[in-house]
Image 1 (cartoon, rainbow, N blue to C red):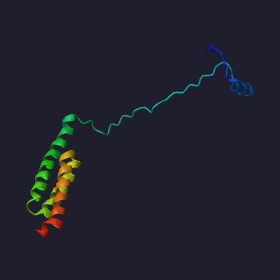
Image 2: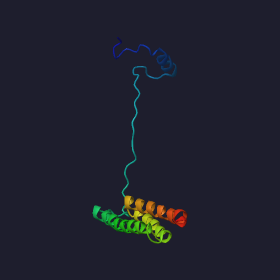
Image 3: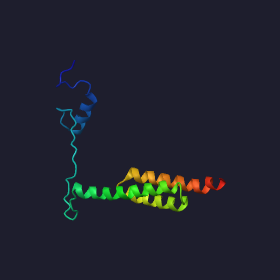
Image 4: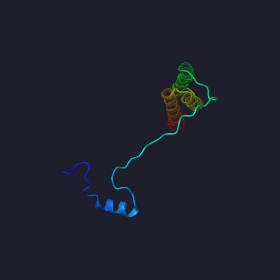
Length: 122
């Protein structure tokens, strides 16, 4: 086994280094990764968790309202209330209530499909 200072197996590397005049006493390759420094933005205000939670609470209330309207649209005025439920569902999703908004959108769409295609045949 070759010791660490041995340069066996690197004869082609030595020939290239001797030809170019490079030092031949080391065979390591080193590199460094650097990241750009963080910049401080004084114009952007720092928000606390309480301020972020206020937005999700408002979204949660709209999400519950959207879900109730979408459920109600399954029984009464499916097209009108279905559209209202879908619109409020998108608003709720935008304000942070993703699950409630998605359910309201889905139920509103199902209500519209049932109201247009299935209910007239009964």
